[in-house]
Length: 326
Image (cartoon, rainbow, N blue to C red; front, side, top):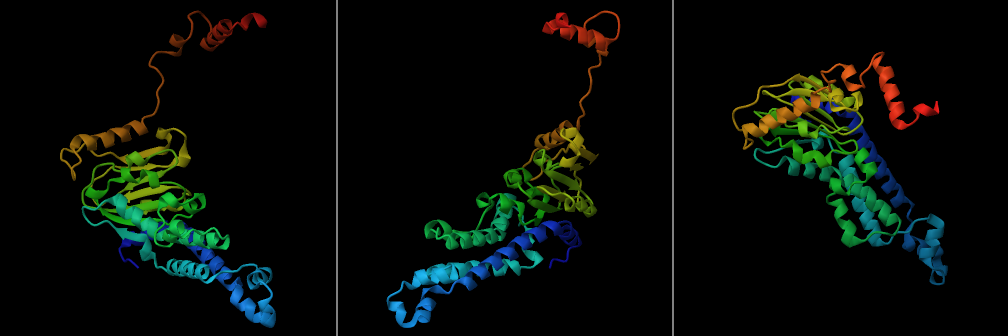
């Protein structure tokens, strides 16, 4: 298991999502085991029938007696699915910790790691397809080799494997991950070296928990959130903010900014100072609270004497034609 203290804190924060994925994998493995164990097969049925086997359909007899009949090819597919599930069920926490080599694509590395862990979903699907006699080799053989997020259904996305990703700040192009953040997928980035000031701000959509922090203790917020989340812990200067979907419907209600750095003057890995300033301006726009007009409320209603609310009510009734109905 990785020994980095930040990794250990991240694993602890993701413990509920890890447990959900491992529970899905263990349950799928047990279903495949049961399916294999319940199949007596036509060959066994012929032996049991003895002399009568020449006059009775052994396959049909096996179906009646055991409920499931697998030919040798179907059994081989189930055994492959069982092997994949056994591998993933027994995997250590290291499977959920990946590193992005300097200069590589964050999107590619994360998608590959998710597709590898997603083989649990592919193996579960293979078992159901074989059981229902709906398995098509040209379409379904690949499910045991890779199962990318694009192939996951609602249940799979709700049991998504979490990832801890170590990455250079220059390679934290987080915007490319937006389409992956669905269901209960949670990603934690442990960032090395300089980065743009607010690389995660573009992911702050209404249902996604987004956190930028300098202290790994900020990871605790993830463990209490049941939904898609992305958190980055930085070693160097960066904006510090939390976008928590459960605190309101408007962006300013969901966003808390603890630190806003000054606009940078140098490029970071090809990201210009103007582009970096755009990140900060977007952060400013999301946290801006709405304000009433500077003019007094009387300026917004018809002139006259008396309470402004009464004047506005009278005007609305007159304009609607309802004033004469009272």
